[in-house]
Image (tube, rainbow over all chains, first blue to last red):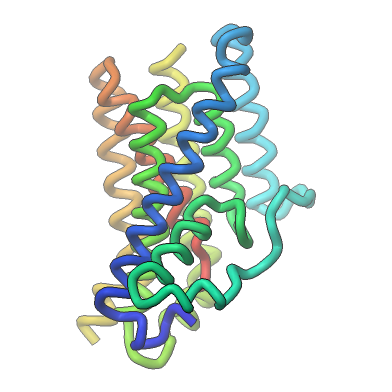
Length: 183
Length: 55
């Protein structure tokens, strides 16, 4: 649906804006919920929790372990588009951007949620929310501009294993730097 | 063809990896709020790109 040329221009921009807003909303929510965890738990325990989560998510991403992660396995209803060319795509993006309204195929999002729960500050939460939305927007924008026939999705299906493995390695390296700088 | 290369999944991946590596390098060399925020943003950017999957 998002690959349709109809989505170009203003609707695509408002969709991406919604993705960023949704990312900020969920990051701030994790910051607030995490304040109950960060206060009683000492730093080494929090770092240990992130390490355990990282190992579990990595093994799951590599297919070694199989376990379900909580996700709302539904599509955002198309009824949101009745709101018009700006508000409709914005709400669609907002609901997708929070990650709690629809499918969430990568474990890295959950790992980021754990990091935010245990280590975030207001500045890092907003930065993470904006970056999460931009990451999702980059993929949507790429799919829209790749060609007019939905070829990006085909290309992604061929390359997804390589891309997700490279992203996993990059993520784990950056996470190691983060934990070492906080410890 | 050039357009497809520019918007290819590998190109997006390269942008995300490049920015995250830069954030990690800054985080390694400097302490403080902004380097940490950059690192967390790099993590979230990577997670966001990986999460979208096929659109």
